[in-house]
Every structure is written in C-alpha cells, then in structure tokens.
Amino acid sequence: MFGLADIVGKEICDALGIKHGHTIDIHIEKGEIVTATVGFYPEADGVMQFPAILKKYRLVEIEEEKPEEDRAKEVFDRIASTNQGQER
Image (cartoon, rainbow, N blue to C red; front, side, top):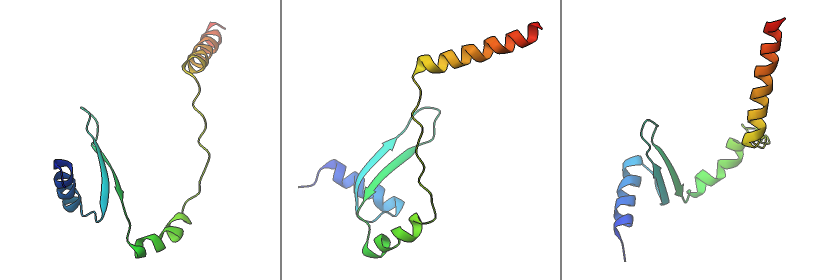
C-alpha cells in the first residue's frame, strides 16, 4: 500500500533525476539555503566507481569542538591581552 509520502517522494526523486531513492529529508529555514539529503540504492556501475572517487579525497580527523565556556574564556583572554598591549 502506498501512502502520500511514497507518491510525493517519487515525484521529487523524478524531478531531481534520482533513481531508486528511499529517503528524502528536505530542510528549509528562513534566510538559509534549502538542503536535501537523499538516500538511494546505487546501481551496480555506480558502486564500482566508489573506490576511484574516494581515492581523490583524504579523510582527516575532525577536531572536537570545545565547550562553550572554554571558547568564551579564550575570547576573554584574547581581549584582555589586546587591552594590555594598548595600555603600554
């Protein structure tokens, strides 16, 4: 049985040229760009291209974001050191 999401989802996939789509998350926020995250089942020839595509990129570790209070302290310290330099 198909629901409204199946019908609308298929229409969106067709409009975007996406074959075998199974998930679509569309994010719309005032003043921001519209983003769409699409899950799909790639065709066999597409899967075979993954190794060649991935070889073009380098994975790097993402630095863990510091807690808000640590960032606030860094800003405060930077402002304090700038003010000390101006007093001299």
